[in-house]
Amino acid sequence: MRVLGIETSCDETGVAIWDPDAGLLAHRLHSQTAIHAEYGGVVPELASRDHIRRTAPLIEQALADAGLGYADLGGVAATAGPGLLGALLVGLSTGKALAYARELPFLGVHHLEAHLLAPALEDDPPAFPFVALLVSGGHTLLAEVDGVGRYRLLGQSLDDAAGEAFDKTAKLLGLGYPGGPAVAAAAAGGDPGAFDLPRPMVDKPNLDFSFSGLKTAVLNRAKAAGGDGPTPAFVADLCASFQEAVVATLWRKSARALQETGLNRLVVAGGVGANARLREHFAQGAGELGAALHFPRPAFCTDNGAMVAHAGALRLAAGERDGWDRTAVARWPLEELRPPKK
Ligand code: KG4
Ligand code: ZN
Image (tube, rainbow, N blue to C red; front, side):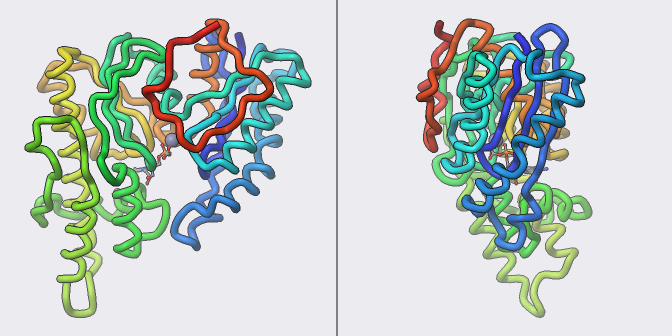
């Protein structure tokens, strides 16, 4: 079943067409970065309005890219949550309207499930079961994944998500928005050993995370810079040290999760998975452990339509459908998901 997927949970409008046999036929993305940059973060109302402007044209473009028409689609999937309610409603309503008009099956997709399954968009998809580290702007969690909809939460952040820590660090250092890529760029010329920053919770035996103390430690070091404030070289060293602390902490807990579950496959997904230093550190660690490591390509780590089309197609193909009363939900814990139901 060829599925059109729509993603509008936050500040990216993503549209894609996934075919279970032929793979990804088209994907289009519009990022709202320029709109939110002057506010230093996502403004929900502006996000919703821009999704309204972008979604329908992106669908037309994706279909044109694939050389397809509406009659060639077998189903429609759109992110139903978690995320910003107004933003979610745009993609969800568009998807439902399209499915209703074309008499196609429709399904609301869980945004985090779409992220977790995104490595299967690549050439060498991971087999179940695996350990997944999901690191996005809103969530940081480790889960054992035994199949579609079979998720056992192993640990999660008790405060800030990893992406949020990047975003807040960028903001307090005046590096702009979005923070993750800005901190990564600033860190490029820095010394990761310059500042001895805390590696939160690494010595605790559980698989939970905490990143809010790290952000405070960065703030305190920046304040202590003295003189006219932090120089570019100082900021580079601080960003490199911060990035190293986050990456090392994420790796330590991921390695422990592999050990505790006895699994030897690790999947990393979500926006922070696009971080080059993280990918390098994890590749080295996984190599030492003899574990297989799977990432989506960086463009499919951050929000996109391809992961939604793909996750939706898996469930639609198994016979799962939503009614026209399906609505968007801001909060939707991953553990509430179940295997596809007819
Ligand atoms: O998955 P995502 O696109 O959206 C959510 O579902 O939250 O993740 C966005 C998060 C943001 O916090 C962003 O700063 C972070 O991912 N991010 C990065 C990088 N690219 C995006 N963090 C570190 N390094 C990057 N290269
Ligand atoms: Zn996301």
